[in-house]
Amino acid sequence: MRKIIILILITLTNISFSHVSFCQVKKEISFKITGTIVCNSTLTKEITLVTQTKEIQDTAKVSANNFEFIGKISEPTNAAIIVNGKMIKFPLVNDEIEIKIINTDNNEFEIQFKNSQVNNNLQAYYKKESKEYFDKYKLFEEQIVRCVNDDIKLEKQLSEDSLAINFIQLLVHKYKTTPDKSGLSIILSDLTGLIGTRNHPSEIKKLFKLLPFDEQNGYYGTEIKTYIERSSKILLGKKIDFDFIDINQKSYTINEFKGKLVLLEFWASWCGPCISQIPFLKQASEKGDKIQVISISIDTDLSKWRDKIADLEMDWINIHYKQEDNDLQENFFITGVPYNILISKNGEILRKNIAMAELLELLNQ
Image (cartoon, rainbow, N blue to C red):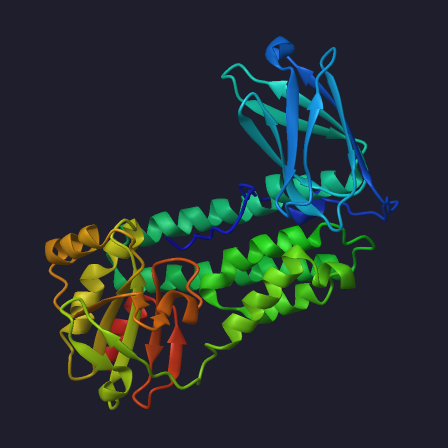
């Protein structure tokens, strides 16, 4: 699904930017977490703190419902406190942090912050800003799946892409004027997953340049640089050619389809939105004089992949992303499905993630 977007430890959720105020924060050289567990805490004897960067894995004793962690991290990071087997995720910075862990009625845990402006700012992003975006994104996705009118479907898909770009541009504008950028690397790491399938690295680059130098070369900065580097390899106009073997063990090369369009459609048998696009791919495949459709599966269960192809009567070229000497998912930086790359008659990348309605409109010209 497009959201595979997924690359993230924390569930993203969104808000109105006007509600979040960023201010200059005193830079600490270490963190100190002072915490209290509320409700049903008599069973809790110790809790564990871990970070995504693997710098910290520490256990603290719980005494009279209180606990404390002291340590140092080289950069802001996603972290988690583990209580009675439950993982509570939150962003961590070098700061004086007071937290309260509340055991809710359904035996889940939630965390409340005090005395940590940076963490409050990051929590605001996760709970408000991104929630607003993803609520709208989810609504677009639902409308697109249900839509039977090709023109309306195309309009909604283009609006969905614009929504993502506008969201990133707002973040760029906000952080340009923010005195303290602590934690931006965490948000930026999430955003590479968010818009990776749309391949808009230019906005990510703008945010990346706002990171402090040490964060640019840290855990998240390295991931972001990898994203930028890999996505730049599949820019529009880049020549594409590779050899592959299809599901029937027949050998091909992309170059042999020169003279007509080639659609590389990445999908999976378990992906609902992918399945909803199959009727459109059938219509495109019927115009074999203009286009060659190649479905590339990222399935790990090959038997389910084969069964789904038969069930859906996908009678065009089907291949798996893992070829003998080629990982097509990695080569084309596929972070989510459905995703496609349209190759021109001359073998160059013409479009990325073209909407099905737009593709059919192009073929009908």
